[in-house]
Length: 103
Image (tube, rainbow, N blue to C red):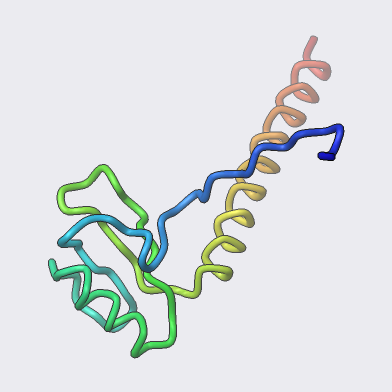
């Protein structure tokens, strides 16, 4: 018997490591000049660094991948989104205060 509540599995936000299907990619990393390499070579570079290969621009030709720690990458992305959201909320509050002062 299954659970009463069905929650579909979240699809991964980014393709990582062996899930990347492109044959050639543009690799970006700290200390490495951006260049186009085969996916096997990109995976070797990531493995040597002890990091993950994350596809950050799948629509580009060839797709852009970055050599990073995936968990750290997700944390920093969420942190940036939260910061942008809080800044936009602060701007609205300020605007409302100004309008109430002059209105």
